[in-house]
Image 1: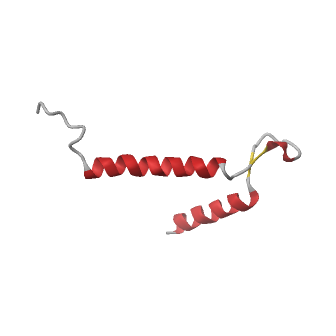
Image 2: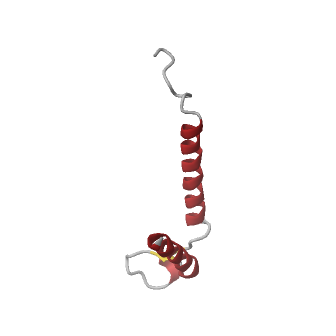
Image 3: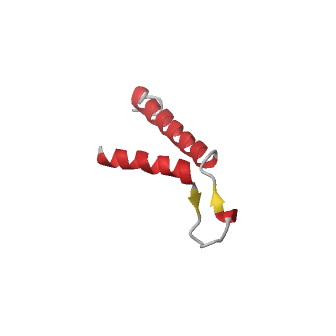
Length: 68
């Protein structure tokens, strides 16, 4: 529960402040906006994870070898 809380706080701070590079660039040229890039990347990853794990849990026989 503590780790989940820290993850939520981390995501809130990323939404507010934004992510940046570690190259020490001066100015806003090195900033990478959180939305929409990271949000869409996370949504795509979670949806693919749910799709494949849901398919594997609900239909485990789909990829089974019929010869056995």
